[in-house]
Image (cartoon, rainbow, N blue to C red; front, top):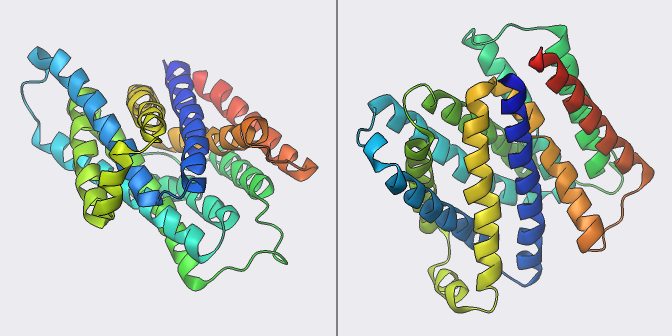
Length: 289
């Protein structure tokens, strides 16, 4: 069952990586990142509402603790997207991505603090391997061409902490109710937050623009399908493992850029990609036993 959970989380991360490529296309067309994130969440919310109503007989009651944890998960998703874009604005994509994917460190430390998991050299080794892979893949090692402001560093780490928050949120909701309920609450909270910080005129324009189909595709791939797979998968694995396996997302995003957007990967970036995949494979085999 652990291997099944790892596989589902990995598939969700692949879809997240693809959605990053779609979002990049929309940003190149001039759309604001918060507007893109909002419609990603709205389409996901509709998806989960339909799923919830189709299982209404089994979702009639809301557990108080499920509502609390799902709300925290929704805040985590909104914070992750918002802080990530702010970090890009004040530093660079490479630095922002590297700092955001410090999430496994936050997850592991919180797990140790609350005695959810036992500290092992194997877990620390996996985290270290994945983080080195991310640094190589994003090019964050080249300090001569990257300048990092204090704001960029803080918001990047805040994106990682927010990422850890939604991992813990969804992991804990699985103990108190069905995934349809937790996803519905989480994305409703997410949409409220993003609506509050987005430009309302841009939100209206997006609905009638020629890019509406791309917004719809982004929501289906980046929220509807991916989070469906994620909340099912995380029920069968630990929060730390889920946070590390999800690191396949930047690999997918990089491949999307190379194959469809004309991006280029140098040898160090390819090495980083291989290191991430090998670490995840070793982790998956270890957990499956």
